[in-house]
Length: 297
Picture (cartoon, rainbow, N blue to C red):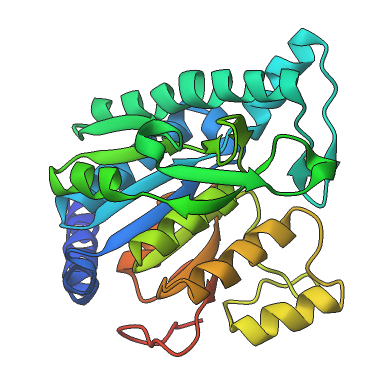
């Protein structure tokens, strides 16, 4: 590369950092819950990139809280064990054999892989599950779903203690039952929303394998209100696996989260684009709160 071209690249980098200043100031000290999931979790490069973004967020004063899923890894393990998978309204039907596999994969393999990735990038991360310190206590979501939990009691002080000490909490969505201490599988989006609501988080970022919420024509809608989401769901425009995400967004806003973003976790630096640029990423869902500047798209 010629020196002149290198200089242009460095100037562009410096300009980007300068333009990010209002956003860095805006989110300093903010709690941002990030739901990490989808196929990006199975790719080493994507995992490392996500970990770098989380470490950078922590470095500039944001308090990131990572809640993860692990559907593809659970499916792989269930297939190896000959246990069939079934879904109802976007949620996994979980019998007793399945919930044991879910806990093993989420609290063990997936959780520790994310923790290690963040530590490898120079951050400090600790992995826990919703069962630790009774963080997330559940009742059965729906008898049709088996051991799938719906959070009814949240005890988030352990999360505050961790990020208060400069540590990134990485949380597996496995929880304790309210009645008899059964183990429950909690949809990752649902768990992230419940945690964000209990923390009164500034942002809930739901990373997924699609670009955002799409309208009837298939185009991504960059900004929506709760009323928009309800209308699109009633019309059948929002369906399948997007339904739990939308339900999570609505509940999180009701619980005091300032805004929710559904965005494509496969896009490089998706979290940084959303938080620290004028462009944003994915679909922003909010009631009245303005950005530092309106989205440019």
